[in-house]
Length: 108
Image 1 (cartoon, rainbow, N blue to C red):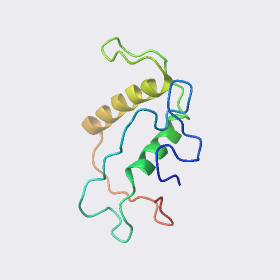
Image 2 (tube, rainbow, N blue to C red):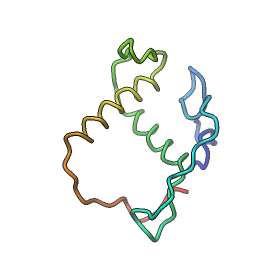
Image 3 (cartoon, rainbow, N blue to C red):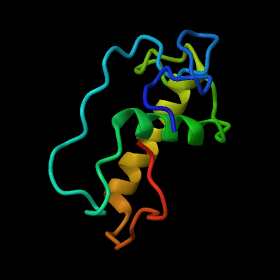
């Protein structure tokens, strides 16, 4: 449960690193308002990012992305391009359904 994007869990920036933080600058704050699980605090943006990055590392996607994106420089940008396509598709085609996050513990 790293509390920053460049924490001791091996996330490093740059082309050869894990893409964990590199030139991201300061992370934005999570949106204000009630959380899905009201008894827990909002999950930190950095924890959300590290969770996504961990999921990305299980994906084997094509290395090159369309020229329009002009970011086929590394696996991180290939994963992000793929994730964007998935999220856009799901947002358009997936009906709403009620589900809750895991509630046994929480990242910071």
